[in-house]
Length: 329
Figure 1: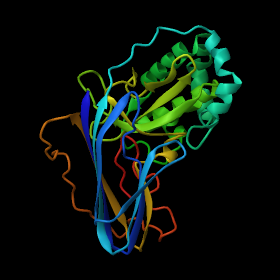
Figure 2 (figure 1 turned 90 degrees about the horizontal axis):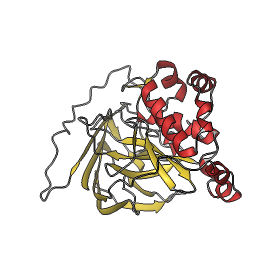
Figure 3 (figure 1 turned 180 degrees about the vertical axis):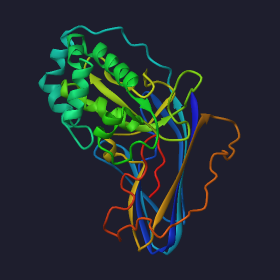
Figure 4 (figure 1 turned 90 degrees about the vertical axis):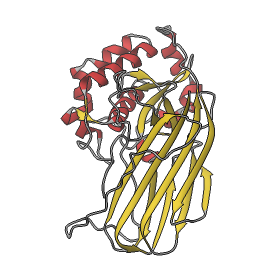
């Protein structure tokens, strides 16, 4: 499937800021399951772009806007060819648990086996696991156990934006039994890792099929989980929609949790409130590109009680955009 992605992020400032430094994780990955056809990143005000590969091999772009500006716009355009879904077996043999405990897996996947950031064990998570008898799933083979876990998370939580924020701990979604894909992925990561199954957070995009039952917001980024099973390698599970990650999923970056791979992160120099507008469009590729209608950014309305952001050196846009949710700052 050939898909086009347009991801627009705009920061509005109540007064001119003197400088902005940003990093972005928006370039789709290159791999066997998806082929990156093209990627373009446009910054306004115009500036020079630099890039590097982070610890997990993700493409990270960074830039500095050194002159005064009242608005910063980041437009990422991608074309990606994804491969058809690969059928998985119904189950694996129980020896897969032993293979997961091997020195090779324990050493090679160390980063994705330990708690980190948002994906941690909490009292509410242990209570949730006890309520649904999740530990009993370990009597099954790892593939069947993870598949059942994704189904339990899907059935137990309502999809609703605005309940949690980008920096919300998993306890907020566990308490409310509502949240977005970022929350569901962190809960699934914490449980899989407690079982000794390497699991990583995937940030990207989804070609949403609402008629097919997808709950995801078609105008936002998406997140899901990949688990490492020695017999199958990395397998993607989307607990938000209770499906395997397939040709409608476009992976942009992988990490231990959301904090490793926010769509954008940075700081600015100045004493002014900021507001954020985000728009995402994922569609089948066409021969002629046209601007999607979704990007109708309203003018910011700054109030006297709005939060002021710290000067350069403090966190400005760190975790600025929650997966599946637009957050204003």
